[in-house]
Length: 274
View 1 (cartoon, rainbow, N blue to C red):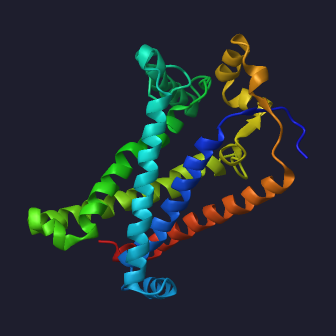
View 2 (cartoon, rainbow, N blue to C red; view 1 turned 120 degrees about the vertical axis):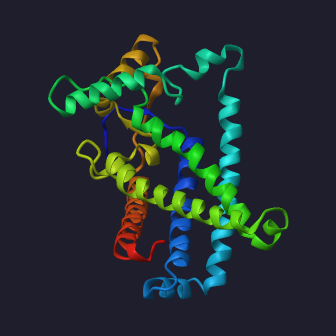
View 3 (cartoon, rainbow, N blue to C red; view 1 turned 30 degrees about the vertical axis):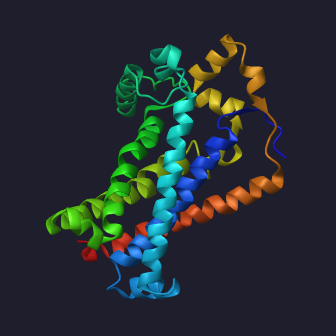
């Protein structure tokens, strides 16, 4: 059992939001590629596994609607978290995921560090790439959602929009979906789980907590701020139960494997992607 001192990083609600996005995104990735690559042997085989093309389409639509509903719930959640009486301070507080000038400075420091021209940046609670990952959902998911809803019933859409709009909508939906998959399966997986500091898995989004000494090395300004505000002790939590840790490692590696498998399929059948 891990007896290291740990502090809370994500609460239960935040972890459930991440879990819902992760599961629905992978389902959409699988069913979407089934439809996109239906002319290939792989596409036909997996489509048949799900009960045929119509069944895959139904799953894709229903899970897409579920994803949009989850996004709407999350919007309500963050709006309730904003301190409207002190809006500017609430939006640009170090605990906020809204980008600040400091993030641009950190990016510059990181680039200089890559080339051996200076020390690495000292981060607070959020790094600039974590903010980018989070905020990417706010332009990617609405685009996929709006285009997906228009494509859900092309006949109805054609009553109030010309046919060429459906063609453009399909291209936009497909391009954004592929871009999102490539980003998640290459950039997010590598930075979040496969880089040296996080390998073999970044557990904090599953466990909700992280080892104090580990996060002190990665985000020293956050720990210094908690200590200065006298909040470090109340942020300490026990380590996750061994059975729970085993469960989320299995689930996490399964999700990682599915993502990397889909990436491999995209590379193999790249000539079929139009």
